[in-house]
Image 1 (cartoon, rainbow, N blue to C red):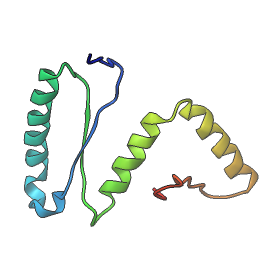
Image 2 (image 1 turned 60 degrees about the horizontal axis):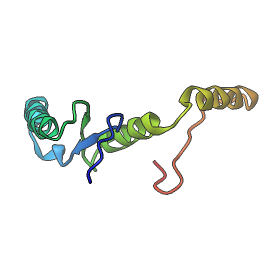
Image 3 (image 1 turned 180 degrees about the vertical axis):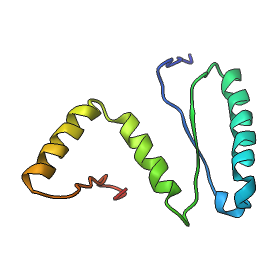
Length: 103
């Protein structure tokens, strides 16, 4: 039997947006988002996040960063410790990478 997970987080990456003219990207993304919303509603899913991405700029990294941030439990706890670490090291910035992809 199928089981619905009402709290599941859905992330959709609309890729190869670099192939779309810059002035049309927002409207193309909105059309895709609308299509995805229609399919999601048919499946009983009301919430999802959509990202326009490309391997040729920072959009894929930004999307992945936001996705990972959303999936980490107690993110504020981790951020607090990273800020403490940054201060202890007298660093301007601390960057945390995901081990498997280095994103």
